Length: 103
Image 1 (cartoon, one colour):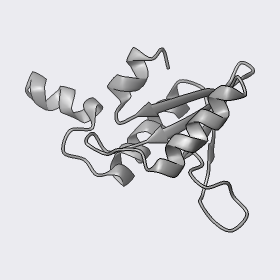
Image 2 (cartoon, one colour; image 1 turned 90 degrees about the vertical axis):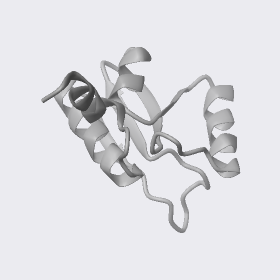
Image 3 (cartoon, rainbow, N blue to C red; image 1 turned 120 degrees about the vertical axis):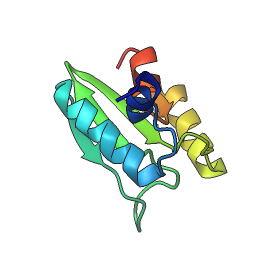
């Protein structure tokens, strides 16, 4: 397998959001994170992040996007809500992005 092909497995290139989410969940499990999959439904806050991840007492809200995906306005509002409360929120479209952010 060529170097660019191998790198593509981690950077999410050419993948849809569902595939990127699965890849990121698998990576987080290997890194020892506890993972909660959040679903948008009745009673949930609009724009809630896709995942809530926990490790060593740290809680992070993680929004997963396909590499060229963008946050919806309600997701931006949710991010601001979390950050204004002192929480940690990460937007990522690949394992590479998580690694660059120290995850």
